Image (cartoon, rainbow, N blue to C red; front, side, top):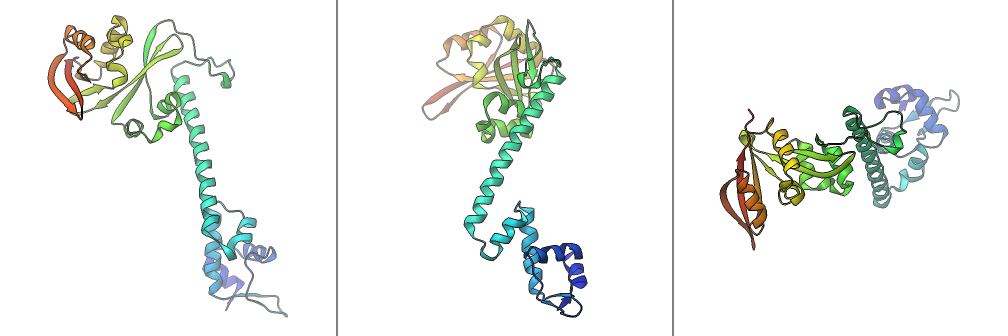
Length: 260
C-alpha cells in the first residue's frame, strides 16, 4: 500500500484534496494507522480516483459523484449528456447574439445610447448591402438552420452571405457559392425574386457591389421562369446550358461583371 504522500504523487492530487475526499466519504483510504493517523491506499484506489476526475471533467459535482460512483449507469450518463447539450446550445445562442452585436456595432447600426436589449439599429434611408457571417445567418434565419448545407458552407468560408437593408429593415438576404476563377452563383432566394431582378435600383446596387469581388456571376433558375429569363437576357446574361434533376428542368446563365 502507498502512504498518502506517495499516492498523491502517483495521482497528481494534493494531500489536502485526498484528505478532503476522505472527509466527505468520496475516496476513502484502504487503511488508517491508529497510532500515526497515516492514510494508506492500494493501487485499486487509483482507478477510483481516475473515475472521480473524469466525472468532474464532464460536469458532475462532487455530491453527484459521491451518489453515483458506485452505481454509475448508462441512464445517468445519458442524462448528463443531454444536460451538457442543452447548456452548449444556450452558449451557442449567446455567442451568436454577441457576434450579432459586434456586426452591428462595427457597421454603426446600433445607437449606443439605446439599451442593448432593444437592438435598434441606426436609421438609414437608402438600400445597402451588408456582408454577413455564420452567426448573422443563424440570427436572421433561426438556430434550426445551423445544420443546413448552406450554414456549413458559410461557416467554412466557401459561401458568402449578404443582407440587403432598406432603412433599418432587412428586406432580403442572399448567398453566393464561390468557385474557381471567382465564379459564383446566386441562391434561389435572390435569382427568382421579382423584388430583386426586376427592381433596377436593387439590381444595379447588387452588381456594382459584387463586381469588386467577382469576375462573373451565374444564375441557375427554373426553366418555367420565362419572365425572369427574359430579364436576364436583357441584362446581358449569356445562356450556358440546360440542366435537369428528376422532373425539374433548369437553365444556367452567366454574366461578366469585371473585377480582378
